[in-house]
Amino acid sequence: MSTINTKRYLVTIIIQYLVLFFDIFVNSFATFSRANPINLLILYVAQDICLIMTITLLLVNFFSTYIFQIGLIQLLYTKFRVTLILCIIYMVLSISLHTWDIKVHWSSPLKYYWTKDFHVFYSLHRGVAVLHYYFYKRASLRIADPRFYESSTWIQSQFSLS
Image 1 (cartoon, rainbow, N blue to C red):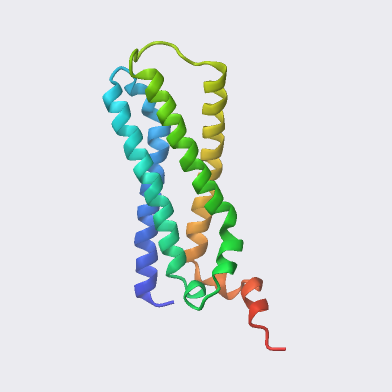
Image 2 (image 1 turned 180 degrees about the vertical axis):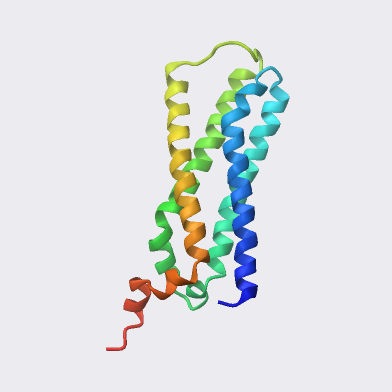
């Protein structure tokens, strides 16, 4: 792998980690901005934009791999299917939770409104968030690691010289 590609992957990994850190920050500290619903709305919109950006960055990393360029898209999909599905599920859950939270929270910011359904949905969102962080970080590191492709048995099985 040349140093140009290594630097490019390094920059994208740093951007991905910054976006994931912002997502964790919003998930952790958004409750402190309950008194002002406008600030909460801005945080939620910024978080949703970052989630769209994480999916875009992951796909850009997929498209820049040698495996994608030679046409083995199915191999990338099978290897990173869980990550892609979790990214999409987490984005849908986040947008749904943010919409529900703002809808209930807008008229009375400091009112207690944790119904059983909201609590279950909130817990589901946070559980999927942890899975999303783990699989997304693992996928971004695997894509950038050239040893992953050299030692992969799934690529070698496609090009076996028998």
